[in-house]
Image 1 (spheres, rainbow, N blue to C red):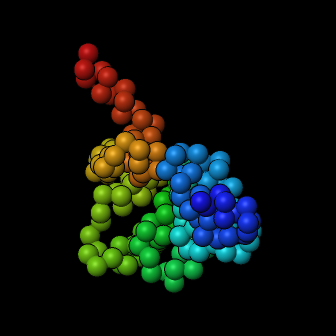
Image 2: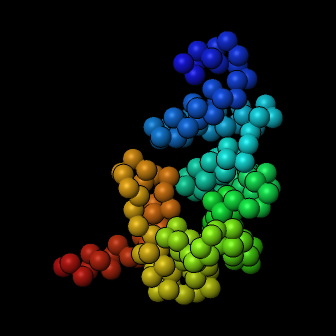
Length: 181
């Protein structure tokens, strides 16, 4: 139905948003990016659209000024009060090595929640900060606090996927293999 709506009205924001969401679920990241870009280029993107696109690019390791801009726009459009959007921005800053910014924004993210205690996905940012500060053992500990998502279909876009990649980069997989031998 969304595709038929787009045939009639190529700038239909609702249809573009629905198709982008479905493409993400199907792990068709190229299509999702095209739909979100159409929303942005058409001036119809909302904070969640910018956030989804920024998170998707982070998951793909595509960190550049454009990715950062998308995350910053999500935070700005949500009035600096959406914990999820702030978490995305903090994660991007952390992955880009901008530790002061990452730390400041993750604290804002925690402050935007009812319960200011870190949740499982927040530990990813703290793990990246620990890595940048030369504390790999602390980083490993934090990454291990990020559980897998509820279903395997959610893994490619999960914070757990990011944490698992960092654990692998820190040699966690090799350590476990040696322990099993």
